[in-house]
Length: 172
Image 1: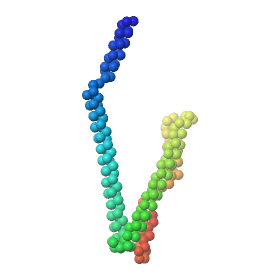
Image 2: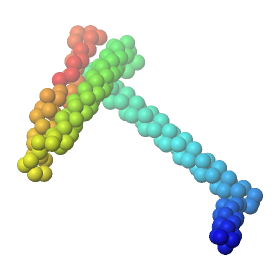
Image 3: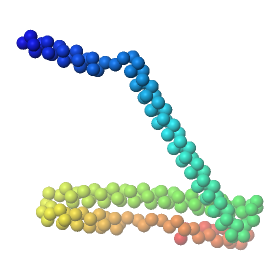
Image 4: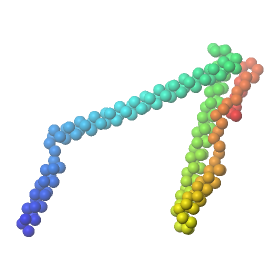
């Protein structure tokens, strides 16, 4: 009994000693953690800066495309007709972006619903045709469900110059 008690004390003391660290070791671990956090923060900043540069590039590219298009319609830069052309193209482009976002959300909702229907087939206790049969029925359910999803919207704009300063745009 005395041996067990002494062994228990030794085990407890050794666990305490192993778990202890010197102030220098704790300080070193703190410094390592601070460095890790700084590096992580720097990566986040770099990612945000990269994303900002990408957005600026896209905006500049979009503007250049609209300017070329207005020039192709015969509008002269630095005129009110040219500015009106740019404005109408911008409005049409933004409307199309909103339409694309709404279509993407609708597609996500349909895909979620279809995934649920497919999962229900996999979980159906009446599946007695084996895995291959269940797989075929689940795939067919997925396809049948998705066939009700809306097609992706057209990204093509059809614009024509009317008389004077008029420009009419619509998606094809």
